[in-house]
Image: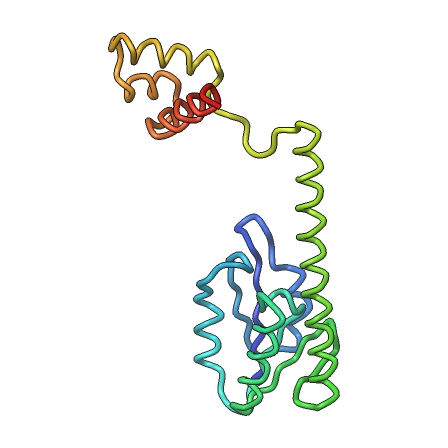
Length: 189
């Protein structure tokens, strides 16, 4: 009967120290993973799900450290309980082994999903508003209009190859090709 803590951070730059401090004293073992929450593969999480046994307890500090969605969270909790494995969310003070705990867990999961969807909605609205105001979004173009004019002229008179031009502009050939195609479609329309 072990308590195994699962900790996740999204990038190598992020530190799991806060999670370690909160779980170290209440768990027999910790499993730390560095992967985005939206990643399809979570090798540490998957290995833990295979390793954990009846009588053990799966422990996370926060709901979003282990699950991608409400459906994922609730279905995992149900599978763990069916296998005789406890599930504890420290910051919610929820133990899903009780009907009350499972109810609170389900409501909190739905709330977390709602908050995430609202954040996505507000972000999309903000991006759309910026576009309407003529703001260019995303990474700045690597090639200027002058670069593209030079490239078109050099390719037209065959004085340089696409690869040589790309090297000269410090981009990949495919980047130059796409930029030239985009420039042509803008001139046509």
